[in-house]
Length: 441
Image (cartoon, rainbow, N blue to C red; front, side, top):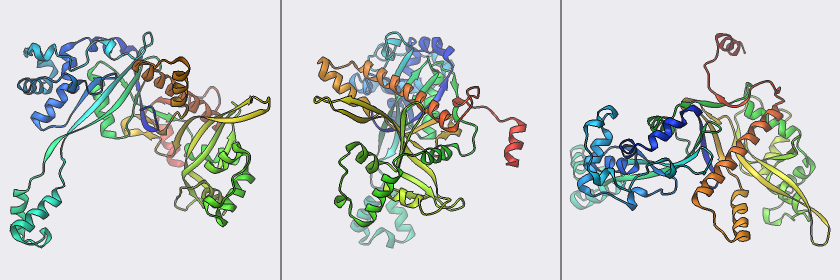
């Protein structure tokens, strides 16, 4: 978190807040869904499991581990049906342990707003050895030949003698819950992981609402990219830099005296100003089509993109990374007016922007570059380091603002009427008329 990553956005019903708070206060429930219990399940029952830890303690289960004699008891309790857990009488060493999060304050990341954070911890019982090398070593030592040259019966014998070394493999991702906006942010793009996490949140009383980026335009991500490119400024400067790249090595290209312009042509192949006075740059990696029916071509350098887009009249952008900038003018110590560009946010824009099967709208390649710089500047100024709660709540605040900026900018670029719903919206099944319309199209 706090850097470039991929986030899945899922909706939640705002009215489920009280049920969620009630769940956080329930020790019998929280111990069952905790990472302390999930770890015990994986280690003692050799089964994959997902648990949660509070946002401020990603390894809380290890800081206050329960004894081995209680781990199996906890694993059996957590894997039992929720309705039958009332028949269990958990030992006080488990129920009163500090190794799991319980009560709302352990999860709330803002003192007054209904913002919550937690770590979703996936525990997988996995072979962590290089089994192929173990078999090869055993074949050399016992049968004096490589494994591939063994007879079938000998291979079977080696397979039985060389079983892999298994252990619990742990992966965890941050999860942010905003009951004001009705959104959940999960830093993951794996369908299975998103499903398991949302199912766990349902157990905590949260009603999940599938959502998707919705603009009611065919191939709208590519349309946005090409509309931006058609309105780009600095076209002659991009072309000049692309021409130089065909004749010189990167180190041989002379940098421009204008540092602002040099930064633009060095990192982007399109830069467009919106009516909101924000600037949007398109950079590599990107995919381009030279013709409408041709396969996309991947490009890693902005100069290559400029060259390819000028090769045919039909050349179009298929996918790319976009960065939103603010152009700031200031006066230096000499009183001279200067400008610089502040990167506000960046995302990868392509046809994978929705995970329809998971009911999630995606932020791929998402970053808020100024987030770290702004906080470090504030620390130097005030000599105070924010609390962990502030780090998490500030990130959620900035991410929510970034999503609103993206939604509004996409509306502007696509010239969507103010009365038309667009942005991240709840998913719905298309009507019969809409299905027929799509089929005819």
